[in-house]
Image 1 (tube, rainbow, N blue to C red):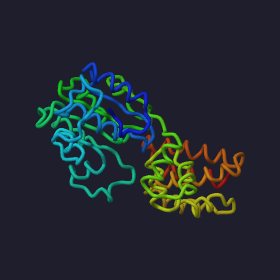
Image 2 (cartoon, one colour; image 1 turned 90 degrees about the horizontal axis):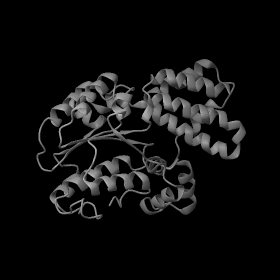
Image 3 (tube, rainbow, N blue to C red; image 1 turned 90 degrees about the vertical axis):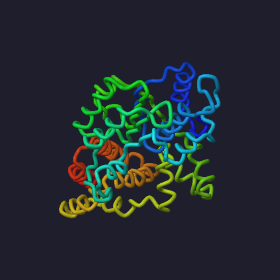
Image 4 (cartoon, one colour; image 1 turned 120 degrees about the vertical axis):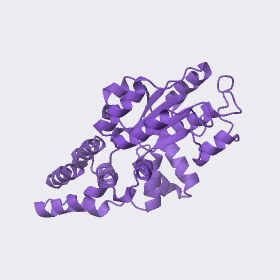
Length: 314
């Protein structure tokens, strides 16, 4: 069961035990960085509890992978599995996802749509599963709206919220959910993935695995780009002679892709840290601190202005 999920021994053990005892929760929060298997685990969980061949209370095999439910969930066409993300929100609200605001949020209108779906009985399976990813991007109105569903969930409904940090989820929601923590993958797991899935040479794969922070998503992004993408920007920000006006121009240019820029700069800082740890430590700490602010929906322009100025001063 959950063989597709790399590592994550503890959350898999908890979910397996609950399945065997037929005492699954109606609301979960999967916590951990991106690219370590949280959404994959949520989808696999949906397959197990809706599989029409294998009884999860009597076998450790998990989902059969061949019944109609398993095949539809794998293809993303199962009517009782709803993944609420920015792509789905754009579809529901008839918006262009690429033209959405730079500070993306999950809106109350999207959660209201979820609530309407919650009130209907399953069409194909035993359970209706709603996955919200990233849950920390719900604005306060959306979170308060979701709370009403968590207080009185129908018996056939399961909500799985996916987030990077528990602190970014309102305590009222956390207290009504079971929190499972997912850990970064080991470097060897990421290395194996790169060698098998991307056909990279050992030396290049080892380098990317070392920069990935245990995230397959991060490793995949670096591998597909062929570069970390932030080298030029990192060099500009390390230049103490750059005038403030130039630094702020750079900040404005990168505020629309703040999180992607932040990750690129973190990769470059990590490379420098290996060579100059004492000189780079403070910059790396600043990057992680400002990234946490972005994940809490602090205005991206403000975050990037302060980050860029701080990096240029150090």
